[in-house]
Image (tube, rainbow, N blue to C red; front, side, top):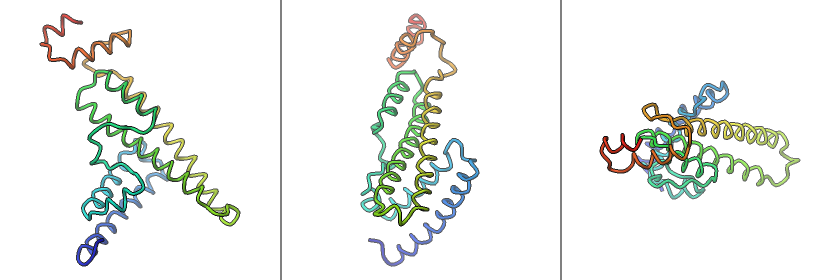
Length: 195
């Protein structure tokens, strides 16, 4: 529990964070955060506040993955797992893989948000009593599904794009073999002879 001066600090931090959330809501309405980077920044800021005030046990009770706790790569969605495996075999540099991992986690968060919205919709006791809210929830779920679909397309495009300095192989199996060879501790001469 937070009490005393920490409670006042938490309140101040949440007031500032609320402004970020309002800006995000405005950007979503205008569809100006196409890649979701601002949304990811807002969520990261929120998770930082949660951690700073030791509220993880309250927040993570609903099984949302922390950006700080993703040292190992474990995606719950089968499409994301498949795409991630493909990305690892594609021969991206460690820096590119790290950037891709952030994109994948952003997609994972969208999927978790959709699942949460679906569960909230199912928790309404009598839909007839709350039809306006139900219609709004259905609309939000449809919008979220569209965002997730667009996210998958974007990730597939990112994964399938070869790094600029890699040779272009026509056969994907050869490219995968090349990616494995690059991960070995071979010298440049050995790698060039392998080409």
